[in-house]
Length: 92
Figure (tube, rainbow, N blue to C red):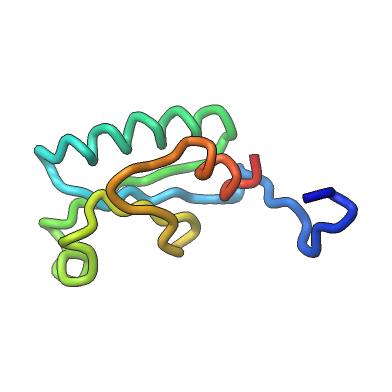
């Protein structure tokens, strides 16, 4: 979309937080973490990791979807992370 037609200002990636919800021993979670670390590192966004086995609410909500990726608290993706889509969501 043309910047002239964009309705909201482009986000500053450094103001965003990506949350990876997963569990130990999950190869998809490990793959997602590599992509998240790379994209967040490039754009200056922060990221955090939450263990679904340590949080009953997260377990109840996401147990069939891990890894789950949130951007600023809103669900962005699950199972696989598309680096291009994540960059776009972060404003990069």
